Amino acid sequence: MPRKTYHHGDLKNALIQAGIHILAKDGVAGLSLRRVAGKAGVSHAAPYAHFTDKQALIAAISTEGYRRIHERIEAAVAEFEGDPSRQLLEAAWAYVDFALTDPAHFKITFSGVIEKEKEHPAFVEMSQKSFGAVIRIVEACQAQGVLAAGPSDLAAVSVWSLVHGLASLVLEGQVSHSLLDRMSVREMLVFSLNQMTKVPIP
Amino acid sequence: MPRKTYHHGDLKNALIQAGIHILAKDGVAGLSLRRVAGKAGVSHAAPYAHFTDKQALIAAISTEGYRRIHERIEAAVAEFEGDPSRQLLEAAWAYVDFALTDPAHFKITFSGVIEKEKEHPAFVEMSQKSFGAVIRIVEACQAQGVLAAGPSDLAAVSVWSLVHGLASLVLEGQVSHSLLDRMSVREMLVFSLNQMTKVPIP
DNA sequence: TGTACATCAGTGAACGCGCGTTCACTGATGTAC
DNA sequence: TGTACATCAGTGAACGCGCGTTCACTGATGTAC
Image 1 (cartoon, rainbow over the protein chains, first blue to last red):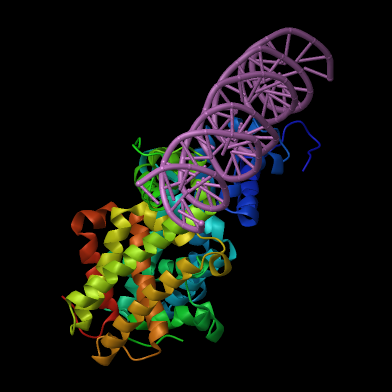
Image 2: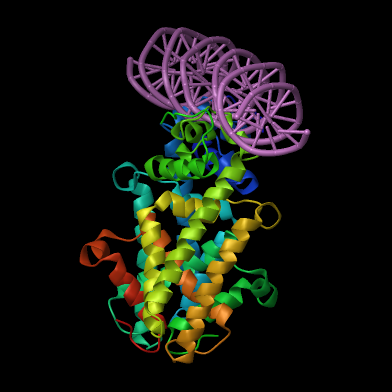
């Protein structure tokens, strides 16, 4: 990817996108600063003008992952305003679908950032936003009796665990073929959510 | 770790254990064949007498991880024979506790084996055994009305997702401090399982 | 029991590789006057 | 509008490192007779 101008113009974002593409193609093991720079059409030292080190780039890629997840969840909430159980289902599906579509990006989002709190506040902020969205969905479900009453942040962790676990197990190849042959991941998600809800959801 | 004899005697297992220790100390990134060999008190080429390549050692470490999980689950089942909901809780806790005690070993168990089916049948066998144990617990719970009726392998995936997800989120630092300050992970697990069960469990 | 010999499980040197990071540099851009 | 200059965002050579893997080798062990 050669450039025309000496200056790139938007290298920081280009590096993040390049990193995401490399993750999609070769997984976490394939992600090196040098390859990312090459993919962005820039010399291997150029990234240091925008990221202090490799960890900082990984943190940016993780933050972007969380941003996309958050975006998808909010889209689901907006689309099914007034229908909490549908919001729950579609937000959950958005999450699982992201994981299955871009497995390495999903994985690095949840395991790539080591020193969360101090070092990478943008990542923490994005993760809190997402969790906040889950809490609001859960509260709406509780208000309608779709989910049992109880502390909403705790219930949100339960729901999130269920959804995150299903996504993880499927993408790690842990769900048996006999099950995958019988039904889609979305159907498994619907079944699983129904194990938790007091009222059947579609 | 020097030896007295020229031959090690049980190097294959020693390498697996050494790998597990390195994982515990320095995580997945710290796991190299050379360090594992060094830790086992052997030259860096010695592992090749027992493993065809690094992947094979990782597969063995993963298989051992699954073996430990299975062992713990079966122990919980045996200890609370005749009390399905307690079996469910304690097996789930055994799982989460293993994840929190040995995070890197847990992680590599679920993401380290790439070519599962063909290449590493021992791993697949161990994972199927564990899933079988979960299915039996779920069936016992269904028989007593603790869990809703339904295909037991599907319900097992739901339960497993919930437990696996909770373990993953906690060890990746995704559960908020405000929640972790208020209660233990075991209490979160109990709460979460109770979201799924028809009858409260302890 | 003793000996010859095949097999096995280690050793240590060597290979090539890609990596993260640093550094002196240079081309491009923006700003003050 | 033109020019001097500071700042910025890249370049490319160089560094040292640890890695996975191969290979000719050797010390130890087991077995047949």
